[in-house]
Image 1 (spheres, one colour):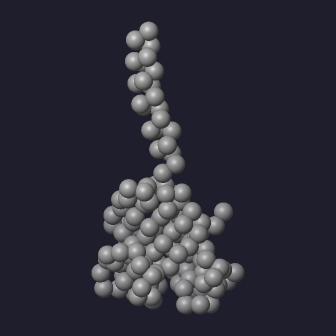
Image 2 (cartoon, one colour):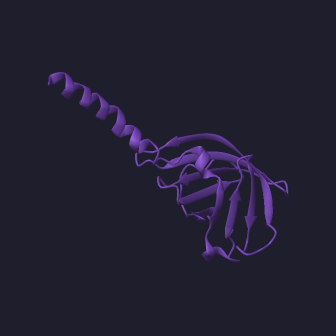
Image 3 (cartoon, rainbow, N blue to C red):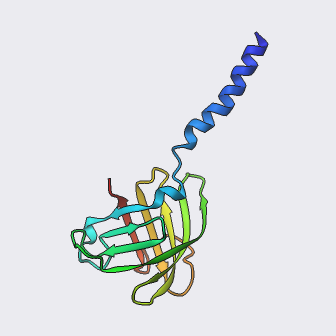
Length: 140
């Protein structure tokens, strides 16, 4: 009886954490289309499309057939906070030659992406103060 209880305990200790591991967002999950219709023609990008090769497309209006800007971003670091959110540092170079630094925060569900960027250095915090903050939602 003790052996069976011991084996069951070991199985549960291994299986339960593994069953929740798939729920955590990963770097592979950050690519896709992110939208915020409230930003249509209001100074932020209404649609942001990230591709696994590091290229991206920004649309000032969600329905535009062509992007407003395109560019390339490079992930330079990532980590998880205690709530399970994925934080990603990145650099970018867009088609008009602007280089900068960014910080993403992906919700643990993978459905919300916040970003902040700067042309001078990596942002220290995720904050709407300063004008370079945006929030987008995964387009299903």
